[in-house]
Image (cartoon, rainbow, N blue to C red; front, top):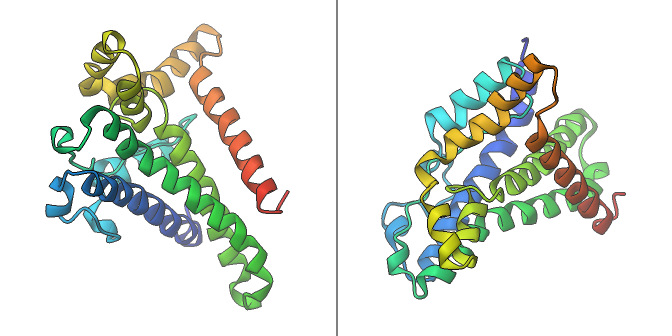
Length: 226
């Protein structure tokens, strides 16, 4: 696959901002709710190098992109949170988990509003700026929706663990060490098996794409871009 320097230049900045703000939001909310673990490790920061995971942020998305994966994803270094230090551990965990996706939706909203300022950008920078804004809008929505899948250690999984009755929350929480493997199976392995059997088993990606479409449409409508 031929990936140009221009393509890299209009994807890398939006991706770094989306990931950095997402992780910093987790760390900040955890700090405000009583746990200073991430604060002490310098994770309440807008420095992207504090949050980048070499494999999850760079290598894995690159492999998926080059292998024409049906769905592209990656991850940053998880923000360390000692939930026992939170003021109300079970419910504060929900707020800490929601902080990342909520921040991404807020960034997507700001990006959509910024579309209206494009006529003010000098002509020679207009296309590059527009592509950055389009990619930032998409990346932040994808990151928010993907992370709200109800599978630990994704944010949606932690929200589910915090809100479900304990009889359901406990077995769900036990899946956390295997969460990434489950995701790889659902998003990559299952569609490949389905293709070999002549079946469309790419169900999770289809659901995610539908949700991303709805959220994108709603934000564009709200910001007067629809």
